Length: 133
Image (cartoon, rainbow, N blue to C red; front, side):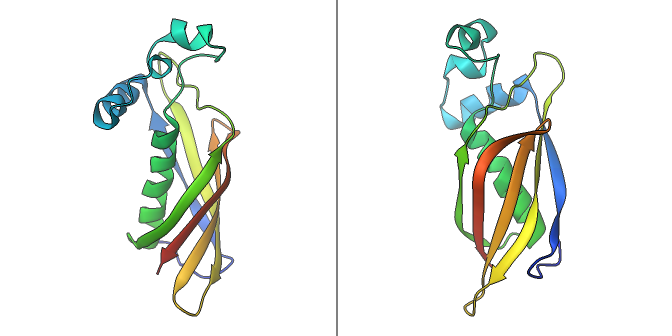
């Protein structure tokens, strides 16, 4: 667990996403949109290739928050999707979640200011998390 002192840097955590992960997520979530599995269809709609599900990317943020906070209660988790996570046919995309500890309120709520990138490109805008810690 990271020290949750306001202003403290959160240790960056990197997660790999493979095409097999996208298939498993589609089954678990019921989101079978072919842009997440079929290169030809993804390109036909103007994407650079197969992309990860946005909610899968956001779930990785939740995983990082759980690791940093020893699974504290998450009260708010949100972001804007600003760029797709391109998942190559071979190998994996790498999503990195980093940030800093924000303010702690008198009632024990703590905000985390995050930065989420995929292979160096910002993919989530204004990601914000509030936990009870």
